[in-house]
Amino acid sequence: MERRNIGSRPTKRSVFGALAWFAGALAWAAVAAIGAMMAVILAAVVVAAALMASVILALSGAVFRARRAARVDDDVLEARHVGGHSWVAYAGNARR
Image (cartoon, rainbow, N blue to C red):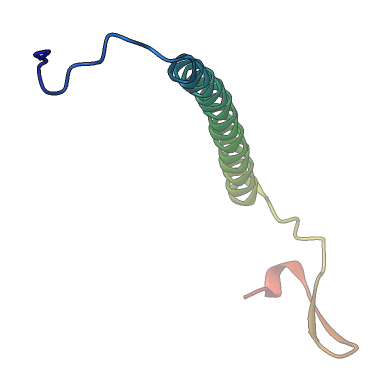
């Protein structure tokens, strides 16, 4: 009677076992490659989102600075649309 530890591998390997091991190695390599590609794509998306956010912040800062720096000329009339085809014009010094 042959003595063997429980859980130890048999000493004989079959062709199907070798093929299964090779297929498992190929699947692992494919998953690793796909995961690496997905990581690169995710990093590119994060960089693009950060770039768009910084552009939006820069433009909004420029808009707020331009609004504060805008000076009103007293010789210019201001017209406000009050509905329909009606407009009301204000002189430069009569503004609210």
